[in-house]
Length: 311
Image (cartoon, rainbow, N blue to C red; front, side, top):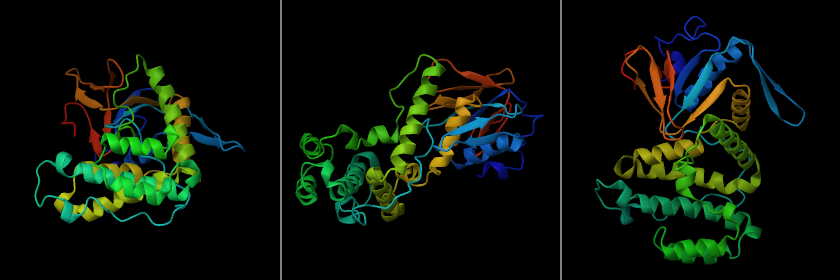
């Protein structure tokens, strides 16, 4: 549901007063539209310097936007460069002949082959497109990689031998859930972490040296489409969206500037929002201790208010 199309949505200053907190769950495309209404739509402006830096100049009419989500981070920025090694290999491991005809345990039966294909596409782009960053050639790596089970000791050793820089190695779990297992003692620590995370994502997605990320995004889309209704899974849909359908890097820079101005405050991952029984909403996640309260809570799939069911 597009948040700005919801018939019950009222984002007026009367309902969302300046300086008052509003809880927002979700950091997808609906969140970007919401931000526009509550910032530039209330007279705020973005200023850009000659080096590309962005500063938000508040109008003083904005609410304080407390935002979190399942991952706790927005989708990865869209890339602005081509693949260096040419087309991404078609799925090689998660193919019909290798998959059970029917399974109720996707994570056990399908995920290892999906992960192997995603990783295969990533390293194809890295080794074939940026050979100076590898110790072995793509052909040698591909042959050895195909023979190993996903995430086996031998496969991990192969990747370490082939790719000397830790920063060049793919960590699917950390990429998918970057805040998992991380806890901050106070909101300030999370805000600093988020600034660094967004800065790193903008840099990586605007520098052609990071083109292996683009190959991974292409592979995620291809697997989502090829597995479809027979062997697809909500995780794969979400991962493809997270890696391949993100906002322009300029939008992430604007989000950073909103956070620096105190208009946006990040709440982290696994955010849950519930009525507190006193006419207010309470939001808490796994990244920060305690929680926050506000009279209004918005979901980027719709809107929630006092005592309505939160979706």
